[in-house]
Image (cartoon, rainbow, N blue to C red; front, side, top):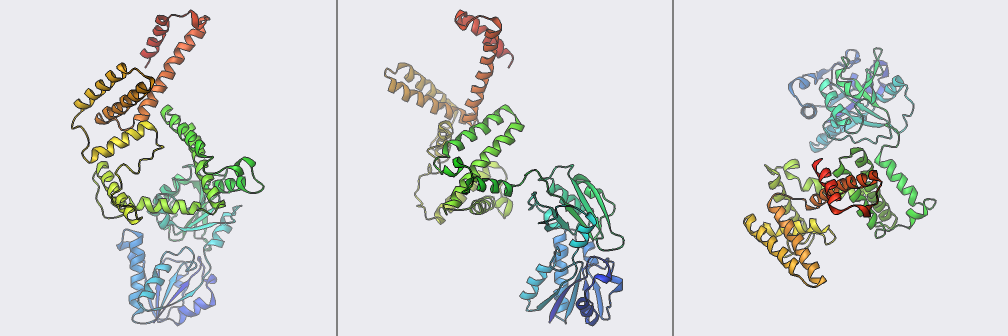
Length: 483
């Protein structure tokens, strides 16, 4: 038995190819994905005529609709040859074609594809848009089911099968993860038919159109202004190319180490200041470091950006079975517990010894306060911890006494380290899980208050040497009273 999948073109029966017309004319059974296609009444169907419009009414989710359509065609094909007719071209923006091909092969059924005129050409002709080179073709329901659009914003996109307001609503929410709410897009209705029309509107309004139907598509122009990750990679690759920048070409993984640390601290600084505009810029600087390392690796034959993304994508899915699988995590603590178990399985699969220390995985290069917290946290998880805060506070007092009684510079250095370590532990017992931020905020507070003292001294016209500590302390207290 054979399933012949044919394309009906965008609208008019005049656009149907001779081969498709003949196949429909000779078929014993013709299945129309939708009888609402404009040329449906004109088709030369002499055998059994079946539409799938009822499935759109009985299923709430489009994936279920498409699955039901595929199953209907397969069931009919077991009884005899079937022609399955879809809008446009079967291989362009048609969500049921590939699943049907897979299902037919699994069932031992032959498949033949007869192309049709797609919706692309008439849609782009209606839009009369410049810069349609490299247009990306997508399905609205597929994009709408995602959380971020799989679109390069430097290139235009044509999204087909915006068949309902619900699909349009889901689609806009996904697109708004990348495009501004006010970004102008174009809804194309009935491309290729006499009643074709377009609507230009802001992205946030596409689900309010009264004209959305089975043959609605959405055109998304390029975002412009070099807003894509692909463009950024090209710029960095250019900088590393033979005709690029001497400084960038000279860099290695080792030489860039200090810059990654510096840029990371600048990100933390903008977060502490609550400066979100600056944060966007500083995150870009961190991203530059990532892309530079990736390009160096590409140039040296080590790995590529695709390897980086593939590894982290798999890791995110693997370590979130409560989101992407059947595992259960009722709260953040359970998530962390699951992570630790998953990490141990990963280590085992990578050939790492099962007896590896539980402290492994905490980088030696991690900032000292953060490293202290992680060491204590991991040791505490296996029972090496005080049961309550009392002994921790006593230990801090003990370490302070030892520092005050230390005689040599070397002893004082060690005792001060002990105090800092115990102070981190005290904070951990009190729920402070980020000692680095705690100290950064104190440093920032000191900077802010000392700036008040500096401003007061400058305003007085007197040199610093003329001020007593009591006078400066009064300025400090004034600054402290401001918060």
